[in-house]
Image 1 (cartoon, rainbow over the protein chains, first blue to last red):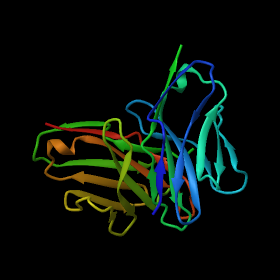
Image 2: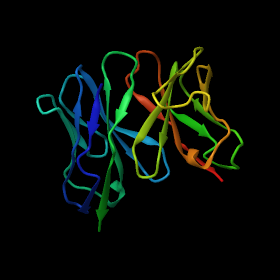
Image 3: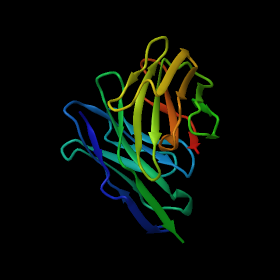
Length: 114
Length: 116
């Protein structure tokens, strides 16, 4: 069975500073990896995903994540955050064996301060 | 992009009553939908996997007689919380896969259930 660990429950950061949200996973088979963002009282929105190919994936709003198989990590980064990036971020993993059952990490609250 | 809606967005009910939550894929057919539950400031917990035309597959610890799931069409799945109690109060979120070969879940906006 797979599992996901998000090491930081909260990450406060000043506007325009860089940020990294950490995610580690465990699985005995190959996986798909995802980052989702959740704004207050809303559902989840897909931020970016890794399925195969290039290990560096990017979102349209400046976030990127790199799949590191040896370290079983999929950390999310942004070089310069905005106030509007304040939200809850969830890392998720699903095993690449059909069925598509997805396990979510506990979430990291990114709080961007002015 | 693929859109998933949920109705209602918020519902308040009395203890002992049943509540039905609808999840619809608006612009695509979803052979598989998922139902999650999210407690305040916590992650999503998968409750069940719903496949069109067949019985839902429930996760361990989720009472199937308590949380009835019906996936009667390729665009609609419903979750009925039967004989609701205050401990059932939560944020319920559905998601849908856009086809059997899809690799991305599209999430609904969620339903906030409060049981008095």
